[in-house]
Image 1 (cartoon, rainbow, N blue to C red):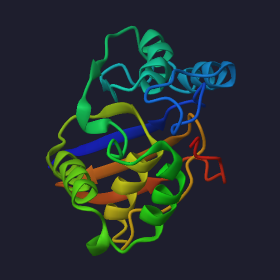
Image 2: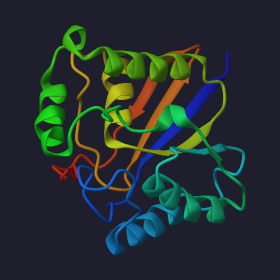
Image 3: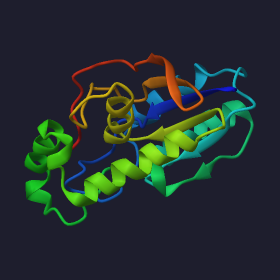
Amino acid sequence: MTQTHIILVRHGEAASLWSEHHDPGLSADGIAQADRVSKTFGGKFLSYKLCSSPKSRAIETMKPIALEQAKEFIIQDIFSEIPSHDIQSEHKQEWLQNIFQLPLEELPESVKVWRQDLIQWLESCADNAIITTHFMVINALVSYLTKQNTIAYFYPGYASRTEIWLKGGSLIKLKLGDDKKTVINL
């Protein structure tokens, strides 16, 4: 069995709040964060598949990484943020705080399906990959791998790297990204 290495990069800081804009790009700080994280890859990951969430802030975070690796990246819906399209903007902060604390069995059905799709992707992943994605995607995967009963596990900082090593679908090593009490831009 071969080993799979997956690097999840949280997008840089967004230019506007999640509850105010459905798809913000990166702020000036976010652009700088994306540039900094791209330099941490150097030319060491040239064989890795590059993937991004379809959200602008994730794509903008991937662009300098792809440039550093001198290769194209693909956009995959599976890495998009937690489904919240039916939550009114003024209620998103409260909703997300609640989701963060709920036992898995009490999650809304749309969130359960989203999480299960991520888990199925992870269990079938055979390619080494660098993926730019979102706070809750990273948490959903890490909480699953560490057998938590909530979707939340830690607070990955903007443009931080969380690394997962799998062999035969089983976790063999986990390196968490910068665990900072960063603001989730609601």
